[in-house]
Image (cartoon, rainbow, N blue to C red; front, side):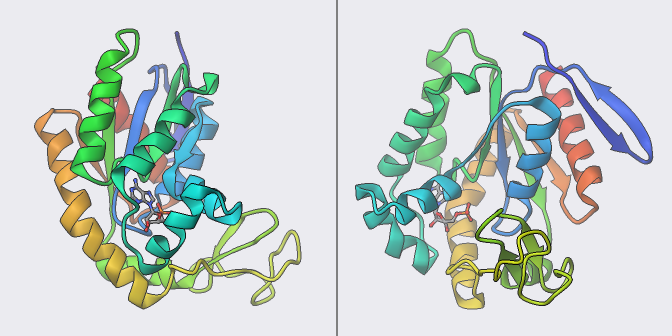
Length: 238
Ligand code: AMP
């Protein structure tokens, strides 16, 4: 298996020949995991698996899982581990995950992490996991979250403070009225941060203790962060 990525760091293109394998993107809500996952998808050609996106799709389709998840998500709390693990297990069976994948927003609890460890250990062909956490300070995260707007047609993401559309409230490409996620309010953000600190921070310590963890400054231009992630993955894979 081989794969390559080209990134620009300090105006310099650097090529990566690292086989990506399973990559976990960790970090607080609004830290840019989704944006970076999409950059890595372009670089490595492996899929992004966002548990938040999968859950929102279940909610939109009113599946049995979606009916349970809907109110939990609206409160900013975490959906029970068994349900999320099962959803991830189904997704990881898809053939596009063979060369690697980017898990965005999973694992978020220690039981999810140990479940994933067990699953990966059972796959003797697979590479060990690498976990990268993006760091951004609290006030910056609050602006990112409460300013986030999404085009319901093309899913393009704007921010009313840092990346506004040309016409306030409407997508530049589709002209559709932009939407705000129900959990992107300041109150729900505070609850999501509480869930993050109490339940997800231990996940970071888990991977740090395994020696499979790196931190990347998430308060930089998108390409520089992506370059930092690629460099971290290369270091952890070498
Ligand atoms: P996100 O889009 O990653 O910010 O996730 C949105 C919401 O989905 C979270 O606030 C949780 O309610 C739920 N969620 C996403 N991923 C997980 C997970 N791994 N475990 C439990 N709940 C999750």
